[in-house]
Picture 1 (cartoon, rainbow, N blue to C red):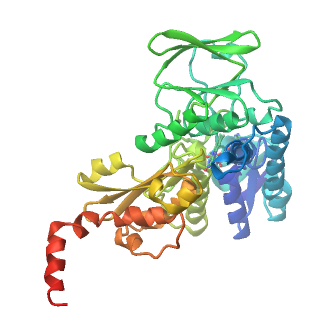
Picture 2: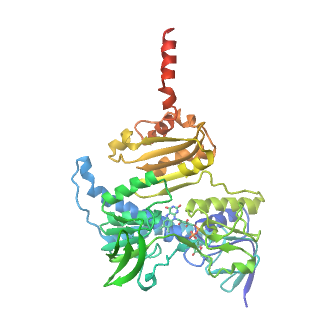
Picture 3: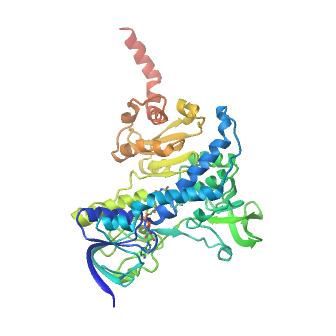
Length: 473
Ligand SMILES: Cc1cc2nc3c(=O)[nH]c(=O)nc-3n(C[C@H](O)[C@H](O)[C@H](O)COP(=O)(O)OP(=O)(O)OC[C@H]3O[C@@H](n4cnc5c(N)ncnc54)[C@H](O)[C@@H]3O)c2cc1C
């Protein structure tokens, strides 16, 4: 017989979004039950952001040794112990894990149940032999790697983000299907860690970003020896000795062989086994359907993060958590607003974006301004010998900031300067008029902003006015 308990809020899924709801609501006095069916911390800590950024940090260290001769310091082929890289990656996970642990959450007053949850009623969830009856339920079950319908994929062993960080030996030749952010980050990291790497993509790599900026990343990856086969057809996959062979069609049909295969072609929401029908919750293959307050078709159940099918980032799951807490605890009709949503791809150079792309802005406003400043004209970027990069800022004709994209050294940090102006719809003069310390990469932002005025300031009309005024000086 099931053990029945009652709570204010039941959170299903203890990852980026669920943990923030549980911690926040509990500390504000709500009685919270958290159900987690696998590892606390979810994808981000265990199979996503944390291991990938830790691996990238190791890869960048290897690259620094290999490329130090640009500073007059003898470059060398780094001695990479892949097992130790693996240990470093898992050491970082281990260092962060206590913050997401059952012990910490129980210490905050959250009742944690370690089992898979499923709905058994509109606001009742069963996990193991416990049934939780809650006033409100939050579904934050995340997503997993999708498997594309390529003939033969099911017949070969392949890696996903859940297994690639467990490798203790470097793949001799890693084939990466999918050149989006996850595929590109892991492809470049493995290449820098000494593997041969081939990306296979049916579209262009990093196709969700500004094509001009994505090209800068692509060019760097090619220069570092990543093979990129893009805009191809992937026909089939088969085992090939100890490795795999992928049959593709580019201009002609050919086989690409590798030792290991990583599939990184998008995400599938974790909805299986949740019995959403029992709670009257509508969903489709993209995720649970939510309104702009993140309420599902059952108004007492909210869905957040990757399970809600919108933008799949940890910071979005965290943003969702805040919206849900305001709706549930304070009865505030807080709504999502993605108009100043940032994201970063942690390749080298980094590729970062906030707000509207050039195409979206043109569709909405017609006449827009695209302000640009290349890293090659930034003294700090030159000093660091990392001068490939470009900032592209999008404003309306009248100079209202609606979006920004940056590719280049520390683009993920530089984009932060554009989040507030995009969200507050500030005018470009606010950035152009700032005093920025010299020499910093941040001057790229100011110079891009300042270029809004260049055509007016250096116009013939302005010269006429200045000459006229100087007559009276
Ligand atoms: C390789 C990789 C790199 C990434 N890098 C970044 C990055 O740099 N920056 C960024 O912002 N985002 C990144 N992401 C995306 C980020 O990891 C996700 O967007 C984020 O983890 C989503 O949070 P969530 O709370 O929705 O889901 P998760 O954090 O995945 O948590 C979901 C939890 O629910 C649990 N669960 C599932 N079903 C049930 C059930 N029935 N019962 C109980 N528990 C259940 C799961 O076990 C899991 O712990 C990356 C993703 C990957 C794969």
